[in-house]
Image (cartoon, rainbow, N blue to C red; front, side):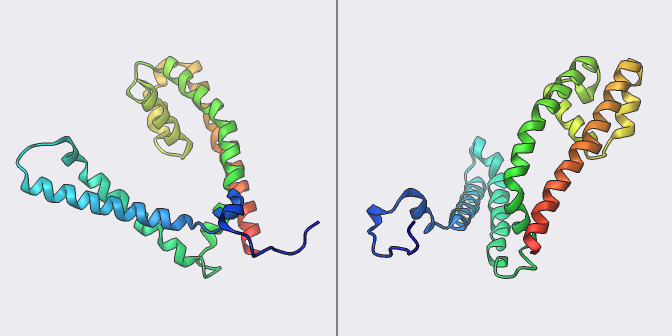
Length: 192
C-alpha cells in the first residue's frame, strides 16, 4: 500500500480524477453567469436599436435573469470559508446523492398518480393535460390549493376523493418526511 504522494508526475501521467482536482466547478458557474448576462445585455441593446422583431428579443429577460441567478449563486463560493455561513451548501453536498436516489425511486409513484389523476379528472382545468396534472399534484404535495382541488373535483364522487386523499397521505406525510430525514442526516454531518 502506497502511503506517500508522488508530486513528481507529469500532467500526462495523471489520471482523470487527479486532473479534476485542479478544476474548480465555480469557475464554470461564474463564466456561464457572466456569459448569460453579457449575451442578454447585447440582445437588449440590439432590441432597442433594431426595428426588426426577432424571436430572440422576446427572451432577453430570460438570459439576463439566468445570468443574475448564477451571479448570486457564486456568492456561495465565498461563503465556503465560514462554517456557519456555508451550512446550507455543506448540508446539500452531503445529502445530494441520497436525495437524488430517493427522488428516482419516488418518480414512478408520482407519475403514476399524475396519469391516474389525468384519466379521472380530465374534464377539469387542473388535470386537463400532463403538465397541468404535474403542477396540480406538486402544489398539493406542498400544501397549496388543497381545498380548491377537492371542491373542483367533488363531482367525481368517492373514487376521485379517495385518489386525492391517498395521494395527500402518501406524499404529504411519508415522502416529504423521508426528504426531510435525508436532509437532516446531511445537516448533522455538516455540523460535526
